[in-house]
Length: 305
Image (cartoon, rainbow, N blue to C red):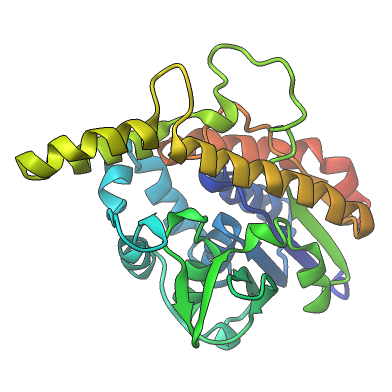
C-alpha cells in the first residue's frame, strides 16, 4: 500500500452481524492494509473504536468466547423510558474490555455517527469520550434507551448514515474501504429453513422472559399480556423483532441510496443473512465471514496499490 495514500475504513451498522468487522480488519492487516481513518455507525462504531484504540484482538478473543447467556446478562431491563435496554452494562463492558479515551487523542482519526433525536440530523462525534460516542451511536430505537450527551438525545446513527463513507472522506481519506453488513438482507428472496434473517429472535426473547420471571407474582401475571405483544407467538413477529427488523430494512435502503451518490473505492459485503440481528453469540461465524468477504474483494483491494 503506497505510503502517501491515506486509507479510510467505513464500518456499517448491523447489530450482531457487526462482529464481521473484526474479521475484515484482521484480513486487511494480514494484507498490509492499515487504515489511518476509521468511521463507524452503531456496531461499526464499537468495533471502529476498538481498532482506533488498538484493542481489536482483545475484543475478538472475548467475542469468540461469548455465549447466549453472557449476552442475556449484558441486557439491563428498563420498562420505562425510551427503550427496553438501559445500556449501562454495555458501557461498563466497553470500559472493561476495550478502553476509554478522548477521541481527539487517538492515534487513528476516528468518528462515531449518531442521530440527533430532536432534529433528525446526522452527528459525527470527533471529540470527547470514546465510550459516550459509541453509546450514542448504538442506541437502536425502541431497543436501547436514547443516549443523553451534551444536552441532546441521540439514537442509532444508522437512521441517517448506515455506512459512513462520506465521514471518512471528510476526515481526509484518499480512498475508502466500506463494509456493508446488510447488503444481502433485503435482496435475497430464497432462504433455507436455517436462515431466519431479519426476524431471528435470538437472546432478546430469552432475556425478556428471564426478566419477567423474576417479577413478584402480581406483576408477573400482569406482564403476561405485555410479553405476548412484545415477543409475539411463535408463528408471527412480536414488537422486538418488528422494531429491529424494520430499522435494519430502512438502513439497508438508505445505504443503497447513499452509496449510489458516493460509492467507496472498495465495497466489502459479508454474507450474513444466516445470522440473526441479535445473535451476538455467533461471533466466531461472523468473524470468519468477514475475512472471507475481504478475500472475495482482493482484486478491488489490489487496485488501490
